[in-house]
Image (cartoon, rainbow, N blue to C red):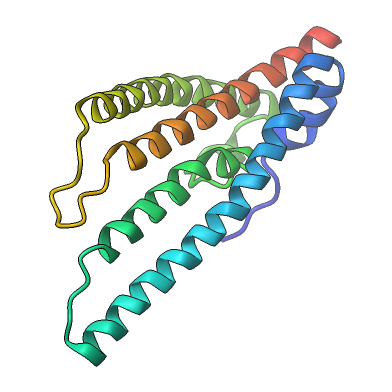
Length: 184
């Protein structure tokens, strides 16, 4: 079921225009998210092509490929994590709206802000652990357990960078109502 815009979407740009630094941060992050979405779409198409090639190669030549599964997984991990900030920017995530209609607009804005704070705490922890994992994979030279053996630092860095962008997007969504209230 499609719903209209989330209540804080309308006041987002108004709040940002009151503070030049917040507005600049919002524009840069939105531009970055839009660029990443284009590359993620290309990565998804590439993953489809790699997997299709693998199926055809096996069917026609009865010869296995050792690299296609991991290449597709790396592309999918990158596309998934790198676009998470874009999805959050659009508030396109799945939400349970059982109480939204029962709450007043003010209480609903507070609810959204508290959910964003809780989400930020979780995502900061996830990003920190992801960067730790990426660093360990890079330093230890960890590779996958396949014949191809690509470095595991690749998907871990994509995961860590995507989670960091998500943290910045959620932080922006937490700051915007405060910046809007400070302007009044």
